[in-house]
Image (tube, rainbow, N blue to C red; front, side):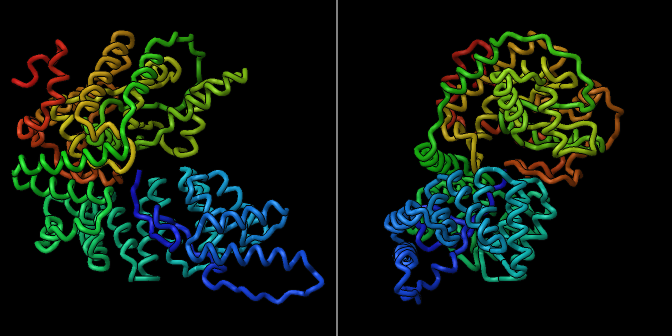
Length: 550
């Protein structure tokens, strides 16, 4: 998903980046409200509110929360308290409670642009993107010059894969306020997904000019074939840039240095920064391999139930495998077919499966296929074929082929060491936490390889093997073979996926704009020493015992 930068707005919150507006009542704390002495209840309410506002505006969140809670315990109702307390709960990660309080504030004051905007932000953090889009749009309706709302709307539209709309919203935010670095960064990110690289670089550089220590912008620029700005490259390697950075930002700087050194063919130095970046990242977000392994084998050993006949009108193609295995290139090839809608990496199947399992527990009779198609139709009401590139779905292959009558599975794979190197070099914004450990990468590669091998024994006719190495070496032969397996009519345009104008929201969004080539084949040899922990694990298996000598 899209990793747009959230502008920090609430001054009291130093631990997290917040998308919230500063509530009007915190901008000017009124301590001496006019009240009547014969109304002690009003006096008491205002006394509590004033203390809460004062502590909140001073950044003393714990004390502010106590007074807000005291106010609520007394049964008092005030839209300002509901909103401010919702802000605190959001910052504490209590998103459902935050949502409830923000909705209470809106019930009292539905025309508040701030409240609609903040609710949109809370919903976005819960991945409720459509609702988030609705409330953020309402915020703009009540305040047409709300620059932050346009910026956040652009981020939400990106999460909904509405990149053209996101571009328009972000351009509007800059039009309203041209001095906010995050606006330029966010627009640069969206332009990357749209393949507008030259313009993307311009906006990212503008973001850095406004905010010289904008670490994330430096990292995104480092992913281009050439930054084209000597000063920025020097900044990336300067000692000064390390002094004021947090641990999370060090990750981005080290990845940026590695990217630049990799292009200069200085692989030993590139490896040094890769290890530094991933070691920090692994400490921040360690990976639980055993949990995935147990769940994968549980699904693998699941007894299949005879599926019911279905009048399915959709053809569902699932692209599975390891990340960085050529899946984005494959999706670009398939989506050249005008009847295809590429869903990207949306986790819609797993959500449908879990929904179905919960209904089964409640003895509610329905089919997984009906639930999945219902969820698909909310997105796709115009195309006959969908491609789902949530690669993690490989663990559900047995469920997919047994319960979705018009499903096909394409398994992408490549040389394991090239695959692991590419994963280790990818600074994933979220998810794929295994990528920071070469050991976990190797273990997961072997798990995925074994699981898919077992499924292929059972469902050979439903699963197509797509070897990325063969695809880039012989694109004509491999793509023709795939199109024939899908029973599609052949068109020469399938050989030019780089001309596909679709938006791309993956770590491959820059590479996929280039013609098919085999430049990355065998690249692992430049990092052989760094990859030794992964090699040691892979060669213990018969299938890969000679891998390091290939």
